[in-house]
Every structure is written in C-alpha cells, then in structure tokens.
Length: 64
Image (cartoon, rainbow, N blue to C red; front, side, top):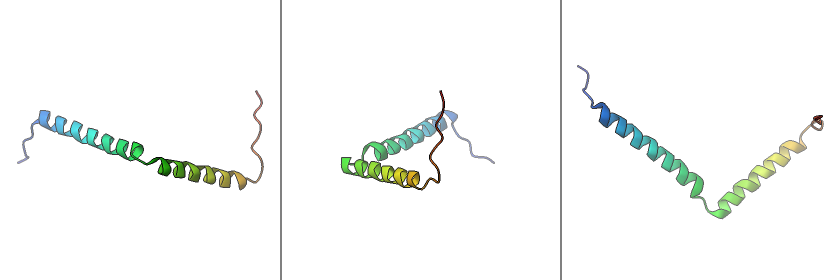
C-alpha cells in the first residue's frame, strides 16, 4: 500500500524548502565581502575585454 500523507503538511514543507533555498541563494549573493565583489567585477570586465579584442571585424553600426 502507498503511504498516506497529509497534503496540508506536505504543502507547508514544500514552502519551507523553497524559502530555505531562496535564503541560501540570497546569502551567497549578498554575503560576499566588498573585495570579493570587486574582484568578480574586475574578472568579468577582463573577460569582456579579451572577447572584444578577439573579434575579427568591428560590430556593424545600426542605423536609426
């Protein structure tokens, strides 16, 4: 036989798990030190410059 579950309790547990996952994501995003955020931004800028420098031809100008 299948296990009997209380749907109200299952919904509440699912909501708690979703909130816990969101809280963990927020801790990871907002819990970084200022130096770590600056280093990540600097690395992203460096990667953009590297990709832009490897272009074969300049991007096309869009006419308005």
